[in-house]
Length: 258
Image (cartoon, rainbow, N blue to C red):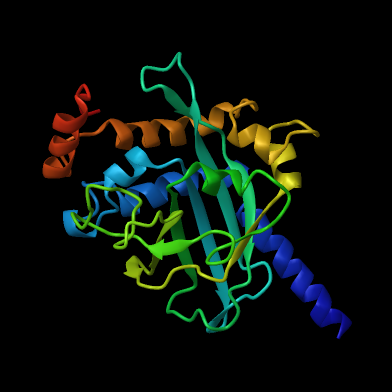
């Protein structure tokens, strides 16, 4: 029994190391390419870039499984990043640094092929981002509403609204073995990892709130992830009809593709 407990602890520690911010920011870039990049993903399978353009933040999550079931405790982890108001930036905002999170609570009902699932969660509201700033855990489908997100051109003009026009706090996109799966992470929880944040930002007092409100300066390593996100935001032409209607209705100045 002791050896079994020790093995579980070792496995849990190894799993958490996979999700340290030091290495996971590169993983975030790969997830964006796998789900959004038009050079890699067919148009009808892409996460609509307009959702990222109008979101308040993004959570990147990777979940590993043992056998055929996903782990019920520390199933995985990742990070959350948010848009921060910045009048000095031409866009009027900038991306914050990433805040580390651990994921669990899926139990045995989440069963799919492959050893892992990559999930990208589009946070549509400011309150969805604020949920990650405290010490409490965030439960999808509990204190944070979650819905499977649209792909391709299946996007209504009112981004972030459900069919009954209620605000959807978050859209979930998950891939296993390179294929989208219809299930969301409903029932799973995310909780901040203070130790990883402190190590990555080299600050023993840094908090998730300071990170997600832009008060904590991220290491230079995050620049590549920021560059990728800005490129997606500034790109035009992938959803021409929707973006043209927005341009005409808002008088928004067009941005050149990057």
